[in-house]
Length: 188
Image (cartoon, rainbow, N blue to C red; front, side):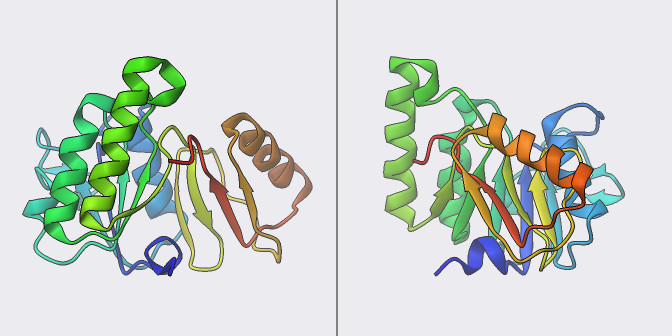
């Protein structure tokens, strides 16, 4: 039921960036650096290659199937991205983008539309407004966190990105391992 998050054969990063310091760069870099073995598809209409990988203008331009999409674009583009994901047959999305219910009434409306779009296409989502997810077993790091904890027996989930960051920092300092690490964000 959660294979799209913890056993994806392919991951697309929508909003992949060429510039270090941007969230889209951090997510793509983590995915590569921490040993993900599946297909990786950077999505950015203004680039042809990022971190040595062929870049695509949209998920619809990717030649193969996509199991998981990580969304790191401004909130005003997220609904279009989700509709494209639905057309592509994507089953899971980690939406790191912020500016939803945590940002006031307009954000609440946008988040409701996001949930409706996800339901329409049968896409399971984590987020929006989250740090991402880390799976040390697969391995896969689709977060913008700095570092990856050692492999361990305990999974950790939290709504709070600040708590996730603090626990990750502690984990790295202490050498304490986790199996999976999930930031839920707004829990849409």
